[in-house]
Length: 439
Ligand SMILES: Cc1ncc(COP(=O)(O)O)c(C=O)c1O
Image (cartoon, rainbow, N blue to C red; front, side, top):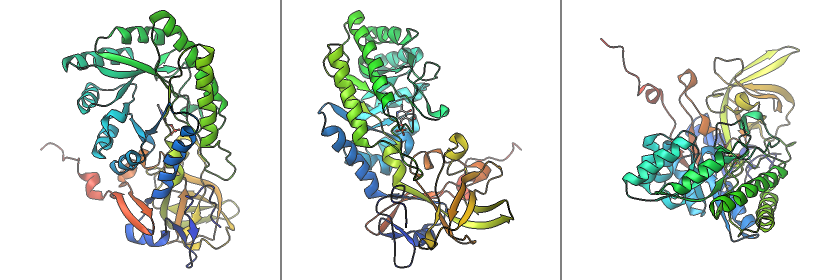
């Protein structure tokens, strides 16, 4: 039976013995749309957005859920997130363009990035976005000048590194002092940044932002993060008379990729963070600020599966069986970047026992192009439809054209219907920007 802990919750096995998601037979989807294919369950996406509102809304009125669009950014996703009444964060001009194409209300957009270009700053200002999350001294100067040139004042948050280490992979830790992101609290640069922001005539500082990392299971790191932020908030009030109205603690709530993962729930995350902010405000005798969280993975991750076609099965007797699919590191970089673990199953043999221990690899010219190491699936054959669950976050978002491989299509399924939200690239698309040698 499909493990509903890691598949979208509408997943089931149908009468044909196939995996079904959102009322659609996955084998039929593979036939109709081709592979590799990202299949997002629309209801699962909406349910996660609603779970965030339910969890935080039950505990406080002073909150805002900001979808971190880097997890999965496209115009349809921006539309969906807007319909679910979330705000959105963007980290580049491209993500901003996707949000605006999805008619996302600009005043609910937060613009991140440790090296925003002049063009990105101007695009954000001209779109009338709600907040820039200021990350460097250079950005303070550039943003002040660009806002002044437009005769406007821009709302901002200041990004700091709180020096908190969560229990996650080194590459996705961001809150430590030694980080390319934000202003250090420990070395005084955050203090100096706040001073400069408050002095900038065309910038209005509303609060503080920090993000400690991603795929976090142990919630205590958030409590420590909030404690550290309140020490700074207290200092800024004392030194500058600044009343901090917003505390944005970033994203990072972990999800289950394999049955043995034990993530915390959204409700537990809400509990810890809402209480930490309340306690911090009480301890430092400041008004309770609005709490912002920026979930990406925990909204999009479990809502999608990637669908592949098996091309070759290489048995090395006594050693290993390699099952090669028609995608790989061009559509899922996470196993190579972070040693991430995934599960796999054959959608056309969903009812057959998973008897064979195999390693699922991609088609790229790298030995490291391993999608799932040592996983049990039904006996594989060329033509089988292989699915990896939990690929909704940082899957398509990190897709690339290595080996001139066109990027997959993305579809949204629900109530037995499927709808393309990102078209499949073609070889022509890959060639489109290429030019011949000069004559
Ligand atoms: C500033 C910021 N906010 C939010 C997120 C989202 O994190 P996650 O997808 O783990 O929730 C990230 C991820 O890197 C981030 O850098």
